[in-house]
Structures are given as C-alpha cells and as structure tokens.
Image (cartoon, rainbow, N blue to C red; front, side, top):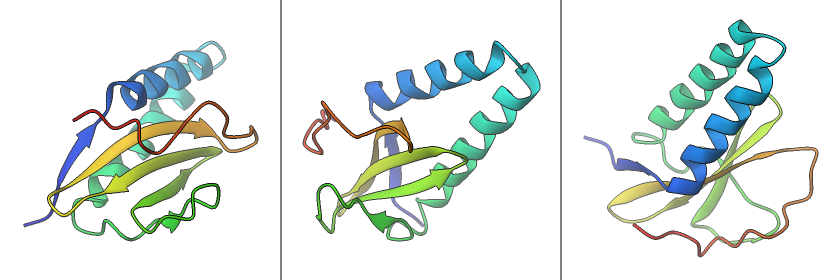
Length: 103
C-alpha cells in the first residue's frame, strides 16, 4: 500500500483557481487540466519520488511534477505526501516556502 496523499489548503485553492481561470475560455479544457493534475497526484501515493527535486529549494523531500504548464509542488514524508502548491511554470516561484505544510 502506498503513502497517504494530503492536499494542503493552498494547493486545493490553487487547483480551483486554475480551473476557474481556464474555464473562462473552455470548461472542457479546465476539466481536462484538473483531471490530469488529480491523476498525477494520485500516482504519488505509489511513486512519491517520481517528481524532480524543485531547483529553487534543492531539497530531496521537496519535489515537483509538471501538468500542462503547471508545477505541482509536494513534500515527501515517511508516512505521507503533502501537496503544497500548484504554480504556473512560466512565473517565478515567489512568496512560497517549502515549509508551509500545516498538516
């Protein structure tokens, strides 16, 4: 059995905002992007080290997956994977620290 995957409030809000933004132009594409993000995150339960190390942090426990143009940033713990933030890859990663996990 894999690790438990927990969504932090910020990451949940990020995904909702991304969905809503894309849905302004295409509800269909918004659904596709959200579903792909959810599918990628579910795989982390069994393959938590499958993402690359986030270059801005250079920490083995903080990793990211790419879904379309978005970076899904997460932390690997011994007992869980915490989804921390979803961020557009073309934007600098400012105002975010990998220590924001609260669960």
